[in-house]
Length: 265
Image (cartoon, rainbow, N blue to C red):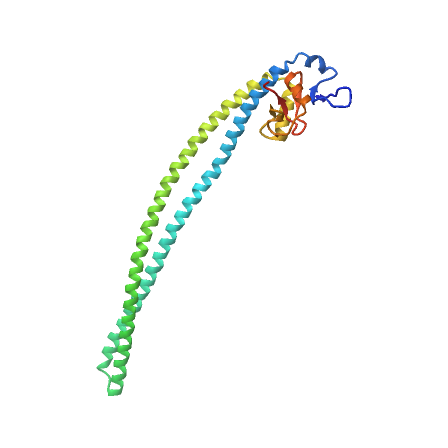
């Protein structure tokens, strides 16, 4: 197990990891400078894996967005077709009403020859004129509906065209995403192989520490010292911490974010 140590006196020493007991002799053989460089390369590999995995995770959402856009165009086409059907049904109803009125006129005209009195004859003529007025209104309505049907047909054609264009674009973009996903998968597999090789050259205790920090802190487990600050959390470091990191005699941990510190200086 890794432990923190302190110097004599009132001020604490930088948080440098030093083993004790039976692990001390093994630790003396560790070249921390070399190990830190290997951890840096491991983190670079892990960072690329992290980014690529995030990209891979975004692909289903991208496809869902494309499907949503296509569904929207499909709904527009379906709505236009439904509107056209409603107008055609309405037009058929008007045609049936018109035919019914025309049949009434024929019937009433046939009844005129059988009428005995002028009063009945006059009443029948009034009924015929009333039905003719209904026919006139129906014919005007049918003309209006026919205009609407023509406009609805034009809209159907336009919506169908938009849907086909979106479908073509959708298929092309999905194919592009699938190809991109294949490339990402290939690179991820390659990086996992590289990661395995890098891990094999890192001391077990250091690797365990690194993995634990990544588990708790996310993408970065190692932070470069930039000026007098931790390069990840940007908090100011004590001079003693910076000096310990430069000496590279052991692992030096950021007191704020608990990441492993290293210095290029």
